[in-house]
Image (cartoon, rainbow, N blue to C red):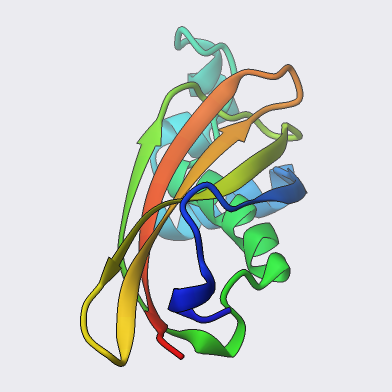
Amino acid sequence: MYFNEMKIGMSVDVAPAVIDKGKMLAFAKEYDNLPLHTDEDYAKTTHFGKLIAPGVMSFMTVWAKYLEVDFFGDELLAGKSTKIEWVKPVFAEDVLTGKATITDLVKRNEKNGIVAVSFEVYNQNGELVLTDVTEAIVKCR
């Protein structure tokens, strides 16, 4: 979809994404090797009571499902920025669902514009667990 065809408020639902415990541990050990993510005995002593998923991994699990929607298609030129906020912890086997909504459109020039897409991500209990605003550079028609 070209920048000129987008409207603020357009949205897509993101398919459910499961936080697989094995993948969570592998990700944490490689990219976020903190005991809260990798050591079950330690995690039991925290106020969470069990391992929590690394925040970036939680977001990327939902992001992968969002990419299946292919909101921009071949008109996407590049990502510009992202700002993730973690509201509640995510645990192994949580099922995350979300909605991606266009919240801002800024035309840069005759060739492209910046599209802000805001995400709200919920766990299987309907609790908001993270939000994100990602900006993408998209071709104009």
